[in-house]
Image (cartoon, rainbow, N blue to C red):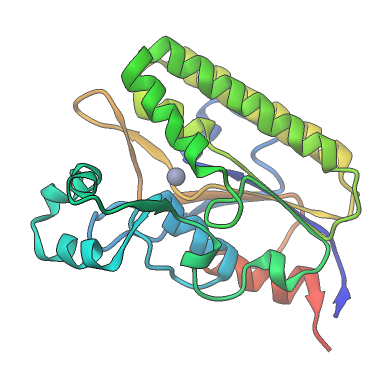
Length: 274
Ligand SMILES: [Zn+2]
């Protein structure tokens, strides 16, 4: 295997194409950028982040319905009862004393990019090495302590992940992927508050710039989101059916789905398997 070009993947959960364009965030809009139709969960009829990212890192459509994994009996039961009941699965699980675990490497099929490419760094990648209990802890903060505490916790987590990126960006790697959830997490609650959302997007724009300065010029910088966010009639944000992507070099390639990125990275830019 010969490594041709290094690839840095900045995975920005829920980054919305229209917002990037409206606010003219030039470091997010690289040489080539646009949208692609993302993977829609068949049961929930919206894109689900762990399923989309699991499919991104393996190039295979994964069958994941949640950040949580229940045992088989409960999975079976959940398929027999109406969809609106599924939201109560956690309660049901504790009632039946069925424990859950968090979705991870053992729940996805296929070979993640990081197992194919030897020199790889993965920071908080969903279904691979994300600290899922910490992520879900943000929801608990929102419920127990309110929106201000939730926003602060989101910002702290964001700063922590950014620090982790710059701690290892100068290490020896061929593929580096870092996942940042703040655009998604905040939009679910604050999508109506434009100033707040714009400030976050500007931080992400600056992050993209700082990363581009640290990686070799010939390296690929792929910025990608699993879905966008749209304002719902009740004032909250919900996932859109398309994702965003952006590349720092010209290419004739256009993604037609989330699993295309894997093939692109493996076959066309990263490796020559001899
Ligand atoms: Zn997402």
